Amino acid sequence: MTEMSYDKPLPAMEGLSKEFYDWCRQGELRFQRCKCCGTFRHVPREICAQCTSFDWEWVRSSGKGTIFTWTVVARALHPAFGDAAPYAPVVVEMEEGVRVLTQMVDCPPEELKIGMPVQVNFKAVTADVTLPYFRRA
Amino acid sequence: MLKDKACIVGIGDTPVCRKPGSGLSEMGIQLKAAVAALADAGLKASQIDGIMPFPNLGKAEAFAANLGCTNLRFAATLNMGGAAPTASIRAAAMAVATGVADYVMVPAGWNGFSGARVRETSVNDPDAIPGARIARDYYMPFGLTAPPQWYALMARRHMHEYGTTHEQLGAVALAMRKHAQLNPTALMHGKPLTMADYLASPMIADPYRLLDCCVETDGAAAFIVTSVERARDLKQKPIYIMGAAAGQPYPADEITNRPEFHRTGLTNAAPEAFRMAGITPVDADFAQIYDCFTFEVIQQLEEAGFCKRGEGGAFVENGGIELGGRLPVNTHGGLLSHAHTLGIGHVVEAVRQLRGEAGERQVKGAEIGVVTGWGDFGDGSIAILRR
Image (cartoon, rainbow over all chains, first blue to last red; front, side, top):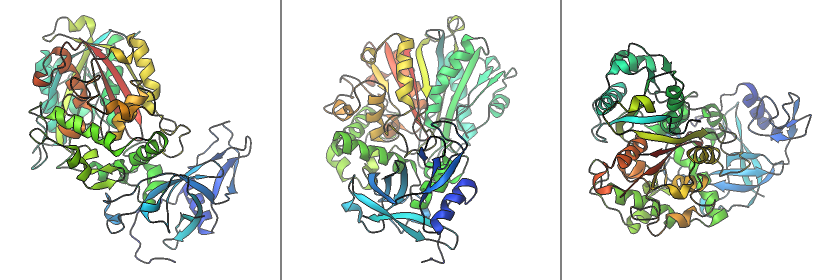
């Protein structure tokens, strides 16, 4: 579902960031994996920090993880989020080992728990941008 | 190598305020502090040949042109946010110890209340801090937009792993406020605080309440570093730089994917600085710990080695970091209750303590003090100073 008057900050949609979000738009959460040593990485980077290899591929994630940490923003500090508060940015640790900053779509802030199993839940916010939100698994 | 090769020989600061604002430009307020530091040291502006401005708050060329530094030969800015002033102690010491410069001025200051607020500038400009582009692409779309929210993620995880409590965060806020009652220049002077007040203050970014957050302020300070030899001829008793280091977390530009979530730049820097100084944390008579938010004090006490990781909550309880406690922290009131002057206020207060000029809040017999800085996504710096 696309909100026509979406006014919150959007990724710049250039370079590797555009590639990451283009996969999201196709309903796939993908992370870079080094073709040389097999290490997953996020956020997207040019080369592998484990082995310095330039060879990598976008590999589809299981979409599953657990909540690693969170905060509840009670008072928005950015005008675009004024009406959204309270809302909860959470960090999800994925099965692949990387962590993703996101928000939950179905969990009231007071029910957030570290270790809670979660599953990716895409949200198309504009015609071009789909964001990887999460829901309870 | 660098131990006792350089000294802080001059300090200056401006009054700090919120409403109605300083009435000065950001360059103007920093120049006021710089001129005060020159007078304190007994130096002429023309003798300053090194300048280390704070990131994005003025260029060395502009400082030199305004002050009349006709022989500027060392100009550098360390991109470490609030860790920059303390990190500049090391860089300035390196410069004067090697003869690259004779006298290095380190200014920092802003109209942090009446001008652009940090919550607006830190990530809206994709070049504001080293991680700002990552924040733009991966944090801001999800509403993680400002420093209290970034660091709340660390505080929450620490509470989960080590049982750190809201009351322990409150103990940090109370200690800073208590010290501010002894400092007439502090914004929160005359405004004492109880734990009940703290717990009743509104939530900003859980676990951070309003009173876990530093006070956005207009204000500036400056200090001058020179070699031990040159220091001998100046007006003030020199304060010796025993040890100094700075470091970055890994990865420095991204806060969520750190293998050790609570490891910061200070984790690497502190042992280096203590080794250089030839002392251990228990030898410090006081510490000025960069207190952008309450938990960052607990975290830095741990990462600097004043206690083990996970023990910081207990360390700050029961007056442990108050004057008269085992380690008085932020004797001027810190960013939380004195003023947010980007961490340079912590350096100035350390020098005042070591000179014995801290008035009612003086740590008796203070010989050695530690200063830390914290910036961006956890950059760290530390200086160990002695009289």
